[in-house]
Image (cartoon, rainbow, N blue to C red; front, side):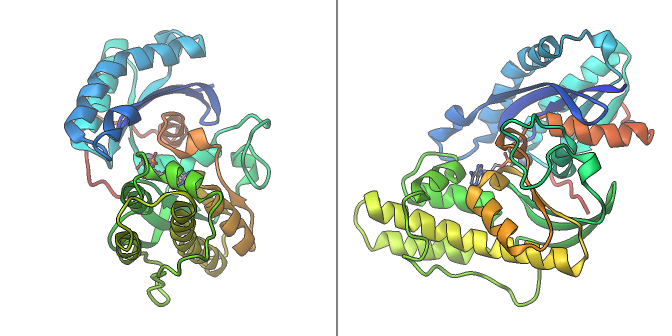
Length: 345
Ligand code: KG4
Ligand code: ZN
C-alpha cells in the first residue's frame, strides 16, 4: 500500500489530498479563492500567491486529519511544479519540500496537465459518480486513449498510448476553452468564473438563436476561440445594457453550443482516427454537461468524465499521477523548481 500526500497550488485553489495506491482518495481538501478573484473578473496573481501562503498549512493539516493518518504513515509527498502561475506554484513546491525534508520522505514533482488526465484513475463513489460508463478508473481503461484537456489555461487533444506516453494532436491557437468561457462570462455581465455561470444562464436558452462562428481550421486538431469571443462582443454591443432574461440565456446557450460543437467533434474524430478505446474529458471545462453530452453522442467509444470536484483543480488527481511516477522510481531533487510554462509533450 502506497500513500501519497499531494499538494496543488498552480492557480487559485489551495489543495491537498491523500491518495492510496493511485486510486483511493483518503482525503481531498480544496480551499477555493474564487470569491477573492471574483471582483477582478479573473485570477489576480499576487493575491493568489498570498492566499496560498495563508491557506497551505491548514489545508495540508485538514487533509491529514480527514485521512486519519500521521505523517509517518506516508510514503511520499507530491506537488504540482507546473504549468501555472509562478508565485502560486512556489508556495506549494516550498511547502511540499519542507514537509518532505522534515519528515524524511521522498518528493515527487507532478505536471498539472498530466494530473488532470490521471483524475480518471481515481475511484469514485458509485452514488453520484458521473461517468457515462463504469466508474472506477484503471480496470475500466485500456490504452490507447484520447484525452481532451480543457481548462482555464489549456485546450489540448492528446493521444495517450500508455502510461506517460503522449502524442500531442492539437491545441488552442489563442484562448483556452475555459478562458473563452471566463471572458464571455464577463462580456455577458455574469459572475466569475464564467464557465459555471454561462452553463447555468444557458439552461433556458436556445443554442441556435445566434449563429456564432465555429473555427474548424480544416482538418487540424487545433482550436481557436478568439473569433467566437469577438462575435459575442459584437452581438452584445448591439444592446445598450448588459443582456438579461431571454436574450442573456440565448447568448449564453449559443456561445456554449459553438464551443461544445468544435470540442466534441474534434475529440470524436481524433478518437476514431487513433483507434482510442475511450475519450477522457479532463480539466475544469469538462464539468460542462453540454460538452459531456455532445461528446458522448458523437464518439463511437465510451466517454469518461470525472465528478465535477475532480474536473476542476484538486490535489487527488496530483496524488493519482504521482503514484505512477513513484512506483517507476522517479524522485524530485531538493532543487525542484517551478516551471510555469511546463508542457505535457
Ligand atoms: O482545471 P481548472 O479548474 O483550472 C485550470 O487548470 O485552469 O479549470 C478552470 C476553468 C475556468 O475557466 C472555468 O470557467 C472552467 O474551467 N469551468 C467550466 C465549468 N466549470 C469550470 N467551463 C464550462 N462549464 C463548466 N461547468
Ligand atoms: Zn487545472
